[in-house]
Length: 142
Ligand SMILES: [Zn+2]
Image (cartoon, rainbow, N blue to C red; front, side, top):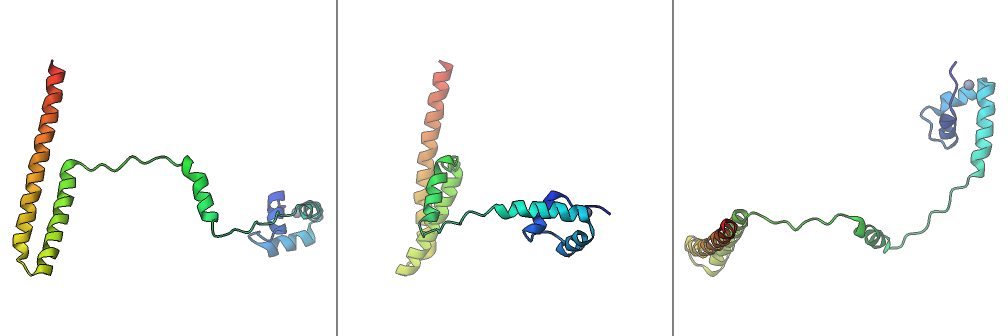
């Protein structure tokens, strides 16, 4: 017959054992484990759980303010230039369709205008990047 460990008996004491009826049965028939459990239970009865403090509605905010300085700072999300333009172009086209629908104008024409506007921005950004890259290459080469 195998006997129960202190950990298993402690779980039994707190009502958290997997098979409490098997332990109860064992304790009825095993003087060693019964004595061990009796001693353990006497000790555990001395331990009283501290009262759980009441939480008000600001508790979540307090916890957040406490842990916030310990959280790593995420770098700002920087999209590659082409993805930013794809997103803004899609947004402009959608806005153009909405505006055109609302005002009763031809949506396809409004999209074309929006795309031309966006194309001008892309060309300007491309020029700026080429100028920056060219400047750096010249400085490196010098
Ligand atoms: Zn036993």
